[in-house]
Length: 311
Ligand code: NDP
Image 1 (tube, helix red, strand yellow):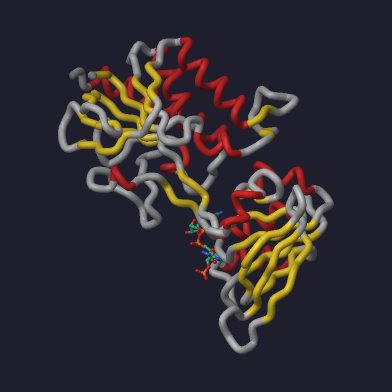
Image 2: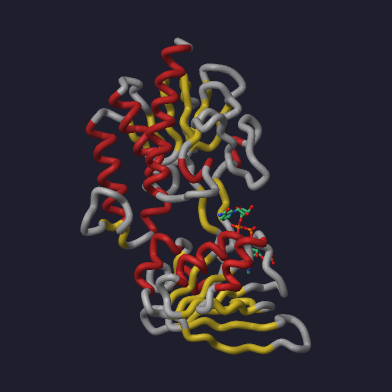
């Protein structure tokens, strides 16, 4: 198989890149990965994607984007790319159990996944009180009580955002200090309805149908250990994200946190002809709409590259 543009990943960035590259006549091939539609397929209601005044479910939004890409002829494949070789052009990529594909350009849109604590109950209450995205789901906790776990900038940012909606926010920090930047720490300290609970680990979640509270352990594993429950309606993970960049590592430059580096406010990576879009290259905004915008930019960058560097 050979293509002018191979798109790896199928969140808002991947599908938007597919819409644009199809319309530009690049006949893209897109590999959807092991979660077709990406992170949004695990959320319920999406109310902040422009164009849906009544809101839309995550899976529906992704199905709409996919359909739009198909309409213009994108060749959509299920499954993930297992291996790439970007050492020379044409670039090469191999799907799980498949033959090598040759591509003049590649758009990487493999996303990032929020890290979870690893408690079995997290999956049980996913969408029923457990979330890893305050901007996506915070609205549902207006005037309610929520907890955020983590002590870095992500957790502080989530706690600050939630504090504008929820009645009370508990910030659960396993160490006796925050790791977040000073300015974030100060903002959190100044917010009256945020209570920081240091030396506190989450050991379980409870609730009948929806989440009703969390089991906590203070000073876990020490003689001072104390176990208690905290009633909350929402439990937000803020312990970091992991970009899906493992297979690209040998070829593409990554930042200290494993995100793909892009240059000069474009989607250009350290490899000429390989572009990156969405959460895999964006530790800061991480929104469906900003990922879609970056997917559009990657498609335009790929189109320009092909014009300037014909195969
Ligand atoms: P960090 O790695 O900085 O922080 C993760 C936090 O989660 C730490 O407090 C860590 O605790 C805690 N944690 C990790 N695992 C567990 C666990 N199993 N149980 C309980 N707590 C846990 O990740 P962030 O996502 O916060 O930040 C990543 C990078 O992105 C940073 O460079 C940050 O500055 C940047 N960022 C910047 C933002 C901004 O500028 N607005 C917003 C968000 C992120 P411990 O300290 O004990 O390890």
